[in-house]
Image (cartoon, rainbow, N blue to C red; front, top):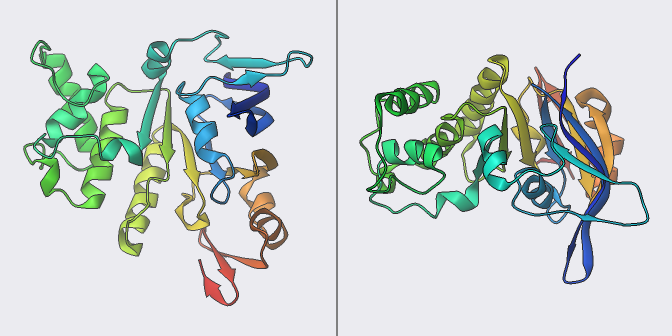
Length: 267
């Protein structure tokens, strides 16, 4: 039986006196891959920040609650980052234009945005950087500066950075934003490969077409609450997506890839 890597019961997030997420209940199991789906403002990114330790949850004192990650009810962000790899589009803009791909990937082992002068890159670290880079097919551009990367190359570098310490879980927040249709297809295939290799993955997205075929569980968020949580075939339906997005939607499936049609146009 697989262990739970995350257990949330009656978990909320309060901002400026307003509840922007929850209360929610959510379990995620070891090696499981899940898509967190919902429209803008539904609470997807807030949920991802709870799971990665960036935001601390609020609990209603009168209700039973639980926030346990990797078996611990109290876990520092440093401890969390030993288990979790996070890829956020916010991170992309924080790197200096002159930093190299090698330094980007290596920085994942130092929890920074580069290699500080007092850090020593050992043979073991070098091996991990090259292994993660090869996995993402960027081992041939390690010397290239990030200012000279395409959008797709930078995204792969960020995933390699998140994978370099071999995390138990990978959290991807809208990883295909800005990519063209060809690169999105390649990214889905790349994520499918990671999943088949045993990587547990949480994909945050508002777009059905970004969900890899290997992801079977979908958690649909609306207005800070879990609307549905189940298999793709049960959640990615016309009725559920219409309820989720508040518009008449038809869902089309083609060989494991899903798309939504709104008013006769694919979205």
